[in-house]
Image 1: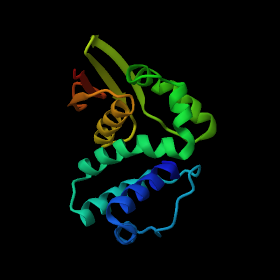
Image 2 (image 1 turned 120 degrees about the horizontal axis):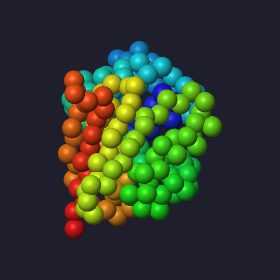
Image 3 (image 1 turned 45 degrees about the vertical axis):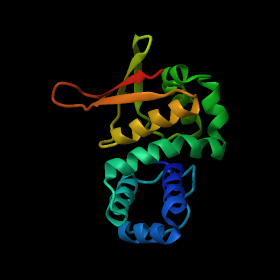
Image 4 (image 1 turned 135 degrees about the vertical axis):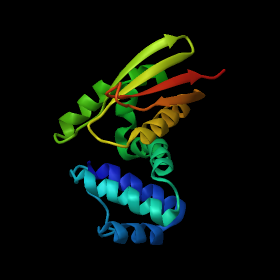
Length: 181
């Protein structure tokens, strides 16, 4: 994953728990607590190690941490200069979701080693849609839930999400998004 992801994780941890906790996490994960280069690709194993170490040190499940990270990612990337790109691909929650693949394609021009997930959004009713999430990376569905929650909040929507994990009958995760009010 790109350093931007790991830097966002560092920022989330230090803002909530302090730099000492981040240093502990890095030590446990076997990585120096330095900043990450945003446009440099790092091994996925490093990111997974940081999440595992954070789970142990902070006493939270990896799932809860990834969900919080997904939500945080929306705000973090906007402040890091990617908010305008996000706005180009959607002026509301639904259009943003429908254009996620295009946004990732645009980002791929700047990040040639990017391996983004793929999304298919199906409107099932005026108040519900299903997000189909395809990824080569395992275990990141909780992050997607956080991303959906963060994007909904960014656009002023209130949602609930029901997750249907991939299993022997399906090659991808599905998220039923219900709009409230």
